[in-house]
Length: 110
Length: 113
Image (cartoon, rainbow over all chains, first blue to last red; front, side, top):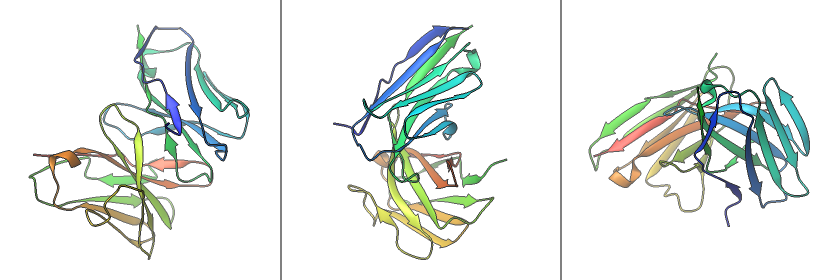
């Protein structure tokens, strides 16, 4: 079993839709949870960073962490074509070495 | 602005040759850097932890003699893929950690022909 499971997609939605991306993890020691966006042939860039359980909102993006069920989510409101990318969830027990999900490819249709 | 600079962004080499990838910290001194590898349609997998002034720590299954890591200064870590083979073709990314987040280089796409 992988430590972090993520549906690879692809996920295709119309512009303006609400997108829900999810990951599950197995290691109870994970306390840091991140979402990265990766455009083709580029390095990942951080979108959201959450420590422990709870919600965090930043503009159109909302990250949720439920440690009791080991489930993490990223919601994108009013999705735009420029949001089309691969979204990777990542976890860490110490905050430095990251364990990534496989990434979900998202396509937002104009 | 960029925190991490990685070079080259892409490289093609012949099988059997060696390739060096550089990762520079631009904004602060990094005692620890991380090297990841990403195969097509797969996630980033940690290869090794680069420690300034000491030996790198390799993840299970990563050959330390094949992937040489040098972290001679607080701002530079290098990964050398020795005797590269086509199966080493991948996207290599370095990372360093700040106070609250990890910063990634632009990545290096290595193609071994």
